[in-house]
Amino acid sequence: MAFDGSAIRALLDAAVADGTAHGIAALVVGRDGALFHHAAGEAGERTMFRNASMTKAVATTAALQLVEQGRLRLDDPVASILPEFGRLQVLEGFDGDAPILRAPASQATVRQLMTHTSGCGYFFTNEKLLRWHALTGAPTVLSGRKCSIVTPLVNDPGTAWEYGVSTDWLGLVVEQVTGQTLGQALRERVYGPLRMDESGFAPNEEQGARMLRVMQRQADGGLAPAALDDTVTPDWDSGGGGSCGTIQDYGRFVQAWLNDGAGVLQPATAQLALQNHIGAIQLPAVMKSAVPELSNDVPGLPFPQGWGLGFHLTQADLPGMRSHGTGDWAGVFNSYYWIDRRKGIGGVLMTQLLPFFDLRVVQTLVGFEAAVYQQVGAALPAG
Image 1 (cartoon, rainbow, N blue to C red):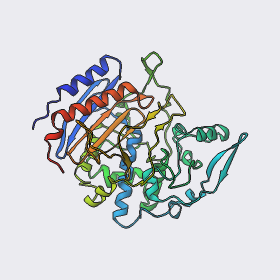
Image 2 (tube, one colour):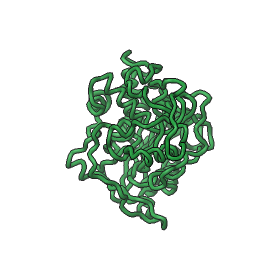
Image 3 (cartoon, rainbow, N blue to C red):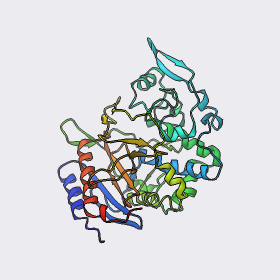
């Protein structure tokens, strides 16, 4: 059936008009390709976006290819591939201003990197790591430096779900196994096969000129330019958040996963990835922010959830919205996607706005998803 996107177009135009976002774009994807696209405000047809943590699923896809090829195993200890990971210790706390560190009770595996159960954390969602950075002067991931991920663990591997630099380490695993930079590996393994021609880690000058600027929500609800240093040139390809590209490119990635990995993975691998891999481990009731300028607190969702290999999972059918088994995630600049294989529908919503989980953008996201399913969600053939 034809996709009438008038409700989504009106939603995005209103989001710009009322100051929710300065620029915003949405893309609806089916198994056969894009069904609808609209950009509003400062965002246009060919706008480039910083993907931030939406990079994670793409880097994980490259690692899953290596698993398929027998060059990597999910339960390999990370330290067997990257000895430097095996030297990370667990940050227990502090004795005055001295960090208290100990050896981990077990060694993290590749699977635990993919599921954020490796023990790694982020400075902006973990108070202990934030204090560790302040006391040691060690650079954070915002520095663009590879050494920024060499931080203590905050949990023993396999004991808790903690958002952090796990996928950055997974990107280094891909580099070690392939002998390529992550950018080269993704170009060969994901971007090239899926015709994601505008995606990568080092935008050229013309692409940089199309990058949507980052804005910051102010106390009064208005927007002002964010205090980000865009002159930083990263010294590595961050699998956790370093890529950029167009919304159309990311839609091609979503389409591949709607089709059980077509073009990049075998169906059995894609199906395995979108199963829950964290067992009895629960996602946190609230993902607390330690740096309010970067992220708001992210509340837990009121339905069963899990975590697959690279994706957050919805573990229930949501009336009028996504299906059980849907994979999704987001990027810190308030960009979001979902992949509903059962109904053959996916969506991408992108802006460039801090802090993460901006309630006004999230309301727009919910409206976007509801509008998609109101029209075609139930009508598309089940996969």
